Image 1 (tube, helix red, strand yellow):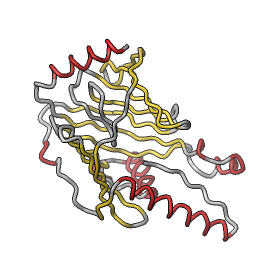
Image 2 (cartoon, helix red, strand yellow):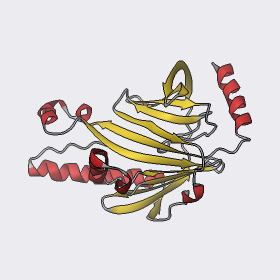
Image 3 (cartoon, one colour):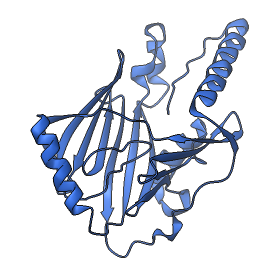
Image 4 (cartoon, one colour):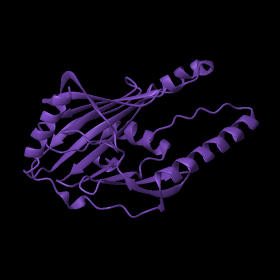
Length: 247
């Protein structure tokens, strides 16, 4: 397996001499029913099973930007279903900028009606490349796995046919473009729905500057404190609160 990874790394290194740009459209789905506590199974009849949202990834040789696919660019039910759910989670203002050469990530996101700018190094993941293959939008994809903790497992499907070491959201670090991310066997998925590799305008890859600058650790601490505060407030009112954490 180590030989296989080295071989693909060498293959990717040779491909990277060619300039690669592209735009990938993704659909994110989150299974809200799986996050319901056992005592609230009755809520399945009141909420849809999946929340969905539309995103786009635009990348060049060194940089990429991942951002919502705005409502004006969607039509009909897709716009309502995707972006209404995004509004509920406050994610319509999220932009993730990545620079693979400098190994940096800048994540501009809204939390509790305040915009934050989370700056830092890209998270280093020791992906384990598996033997499975599957096709996504006509591209042969290889499986890669990473265990975040005892309760969270990531599965990435990447294609060496597109020589870009990036992917949706904050995911990257594989010898090829990530076309699908699967968290905990379908709890959350981010899947490519369309690929454009010709005549892509990369001038829109702009470093986000909106928000209070914090580190990832500082943001996580703030979020945990606010979530605890909200739980206490809901508990004192006698009404249970269901919180689904989405990065």
